[in-house]
Length: 373
View 1: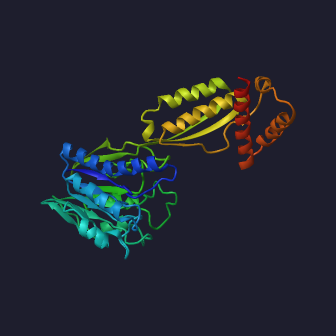
View 2 (view 1 turned 90 degrees about the vertical axis):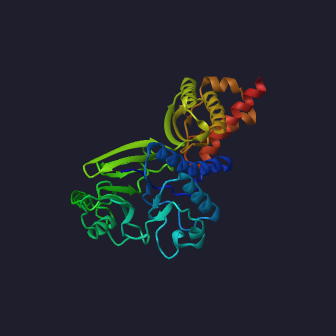
View 3 (view 1 turned 90 degrees about the horizontal axis):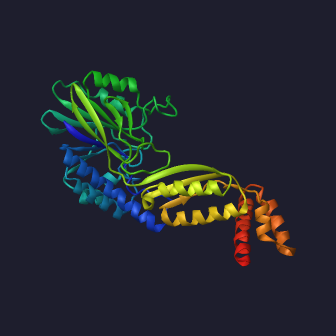
């Protein structure tokens, strides 16, 4: 049995750091990632796709997102089994119970809305542990396994959503998936693969217990996002291969700057980043710069902001330490010299006022330098 394991599509998710143009492209490519995983599955000869929860960002998604998502699923052209997760639980207001979903749902899509096994073909079943609320009563995998009898000669793919206790921030939480119980269910033949969702990073928990991660990156702390898992499964063998389907990159970098040479090195690093139009870059800058180097940095960042999908600059940035070159270049006197000294004092602090003072000093340097030229 060959199939695709994916999860955490979260269709309808918005990222606040994108401007309108980049946000529109990002949303478009999230639907396209669904279509690309379909291409991967068809080319590899997969029989079906299981989506281990959080198909939609919430149960209150707009009609356009719903219909575009269902259109993308239809284009996969393989049977798709959707599991309600914590973002889109099967509660009274569930998107899966809505008339809009029922009317537009393509024929190749099945919602795993109970723990009853669904036969894919003779000898192969998919069985899910759907979330019925945002606060499940306990370990849903354990409850699923308890209701399944071992079935020799039959393959079962179990689909669930949530944190395993070995990786959870709070392993004592009653809702985490207990690995001991999941492994026991596998050993007893109650199911033969546990497809998990919730972690956005592709993660091997055990040979037959995996997180697929999200098919398109959603945050900066994700490891190996943008993947789908291609699984070859029988009772005695399980082989899993990661395939890339995502196009976007959320990248976090830090640079401590100490002069124009360091700014130049930062520029070279930014230049080496490929596909900038699909990259959100969170760039934390530290160190200390004289004004002339800070002016060069501002020019570099202004150009980078026009090339990257998003450029985020957390923190106050490098300290300003004017040197003799700065003072000589400015050649200020009178009110301008006094303003320079006042801004210099304010820039040494923290908070919004200090950040404004640093920006004003850099602007003063550029204006004074342009006037002198």
